Structures are given as structure tokens and as C-alpha cells.
Amino acid sequence: MVVNPFTQDKEIVFGAGRTLFKQGDRDRDLFFVVRGEIDLIVRDEASGTEVLIETIKDKSVLGTMSFLEGEARSATAITKTEVTLVKINQSVRDKIFKSVPNWFGVLVKDLANSIRRLDMKYLKLVAELDNCKKQLAIKEKQLEDLRGKVKETTT
Image (cartoon, rainbow, N blue to C red; front, side, top):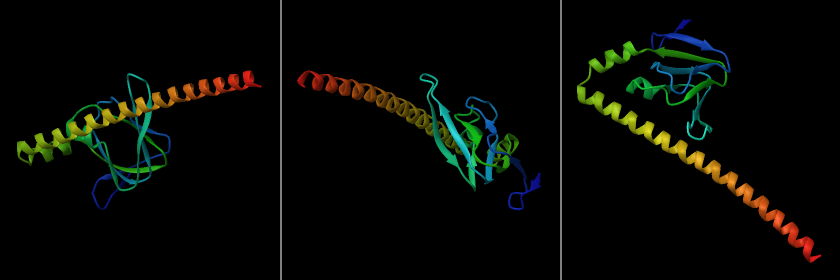
């Protein structure tokens, strides 16, 4: 591990293809992505559909909602390339929240909850769109078959 001169925290390096956390995990650490790319994937429990929500890149933050809310992870994070991260644990979060007024902590948690709800609605819409595409493909195939039969009967 190397100490990052900007944050005074230790940098951690992970290779490509490493799962940092899974959707539903209860760990609540926050990560600053110094270098590299991480895919965020959400699985809809009802349909089983997995959707790539975003690829996090250099100088980004990962795990904000779980860090702020203290709730389970809403996505799975898998390293796409080798990544260098700075990990901030819950003790730092607790110190931050003790230093601000109570109403601010409530506001931050409410915003994080709103974002989580929007993420779930987005995932549901993506699953519905995927289902519509499948249904359309079936209908197009049926139409193509009918056109073929009509052509056969007219010739």
C-alpha cells in the first residue's frame, strides 16, 4: 500500500475482474477511485435481469449511498481494469456526522434514499424495455412467417 499525498490515506490496488462488493452486501465503505475503471451492475430480483448501470472511472467516488445511508449495497462493483482505490471506512463517516447538525445527517440520508428509489425505478424500466424488445422480436418473426406463407399461396 502507498499513502496518497492528497488524502493521507492508503491506496489499495486491485486487478481486473475483481468483485469489490456485491448487491445486497452490508459493508458500507466508501471508495475514491484514483485510477482505473469499475463496472456497476444491478440485478432485478423479480426478473433476474442484470444491467450495467455505469462504469466508474478515474477520480470518481464509489459506494456513496451505502456509506451515507448505512444500507445494503444497491449494485455489484467489478473492476474492469486494474484499479487504485482509497478506502474510507464507517468510523470516518461517524466522525463526519458527529461534526454536523442532526438535520444535515437526516437530509443527506433522505437524498441517498431518493436516489436509491430512482435507481430501482430505472432498473424496473430497463427490465420492462428488455421484455418489450423480446416480445417485438417474437411478433416480427411471426409476421415474417405469415408473409412467407402469403407469398407461397399467391405464387
